Length: 60
Image 1 (cartoon, rainbow, N blue to C red):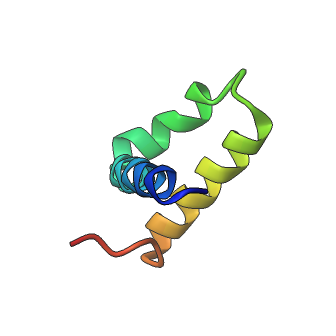
Image 2 (cartoon, helix red, strand yellow; image 1 turned 60 degrees about the vertical axis):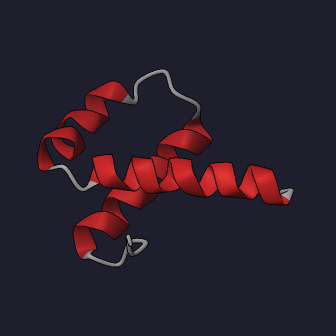
């Protein structure tokens, strides 16, 4: 990725991780992922696992 693309991705990743730390969102997510791209499903499930275990990306 180019620098600008990486910066944008990092912002989205922070935002997704913030949502995935919310218990209500994490609980609703399986029903929300139906029909999504399989690679995105795997990614967001990994984010949920990381954030629930406390090994996610630290926020400033």
